[in-house]
Picture 1 (cartoon, rainbow, N blue to C red):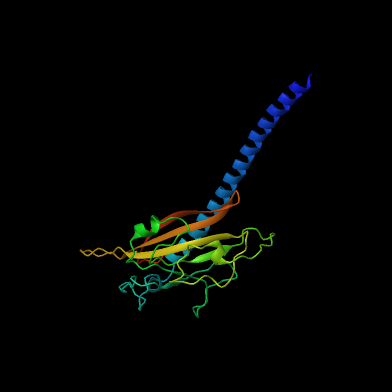
Picture 2 (tube, rainbow, N blue to C red):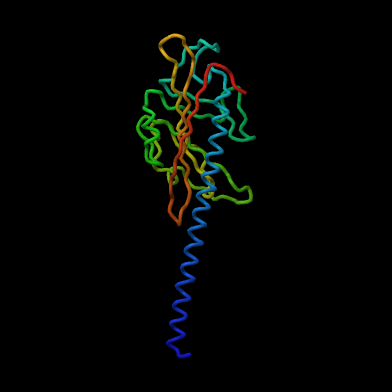
Length: 221
C-alpha cells in the first residue's frame, strides 16, 4: 500500500474510534444521571414516609394533639426527621429537621421554579449524602455548590458538603384540604419538591422532581 492509502485508512479508523468513544462517554454520563436520580427519589420517599407518620399536631403545627387540632400552616415550621442512623430524632428538638414553606406560597411557585434557584418565600433545606463510603470527599462550600439558594430565610448549613457527595435541596409544603361543607374530613396535602446536583461533563447541573401525597387525621404506620 502507498503512504496515501495508509493515511486514509488511519483517518477512517480514527473517526470510527472517536464515534465509539463519544458513544461510551454519553452512555456513562446518562448512567451517572440515572443513578443520581434513583438515589434522590429514594431519599425523598424515605422522608415522605417519616412525615406521614408524625403525630398530627407536629405534622400540621398545631398546639394540641387531637384530631380536631387547628393547623398553623401559614408560617414556616420544622418537622423532625431521621437522616441516617447517626441522626436519630432528638426529643429535645435538636435532631435533623426539614423546614416547611408556608401554605400561602402557591404550589406552582415550587413546582415551576428553575432547578437550583429558590423563588421568593420558599424555604430551602440543603443536605448532602455520602453515596460512596470508600471515597474520601474533598470539602467544598455550600455557597459555591448552591449559589441559587435563598439565604434570607435559612442560612447555608454549617457543615460543608463533600465534593463527590450527592447534594440535594428540599422544599416541603403542607396545605389544609379540609372542605368547608359538611361532612368535614380532615385532610392535608404534603408536597416535597426536590432538586439534586451532579456533574455532567465538567459542568454542574441541577435537576428537580416532586412528590405529593395526602394525609388524613388517621395515624399511619
